[in-house]
Amino acid sequence: MASILASGEYSERTLKLSGEVIARNAANYTAWQFRRKCIEVLHADATPEVSEPCTACLNFCRAHIIPRLLGATTGVEG
Image (tube, rainbow, N blue to C red; front, side, top):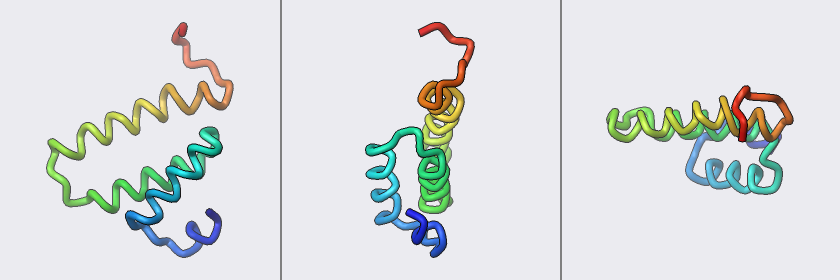
């Protein structure tokens, strides 16, 4: 993952790779951030119908999923 970060490559290949890294370690915040950037770059010209649901999903993960994986409290009983 470090070599991909250093290269600055944002492609379908690196998007897939980031998904594999997250599948192995869902608490890897760097992989989540890289994946978010890949999606932003790959879908920069997307219409609002495509980009808004993606943004909402990413914001939900950032606010609720990642903190739980890291052991932080979100104030939501679950």
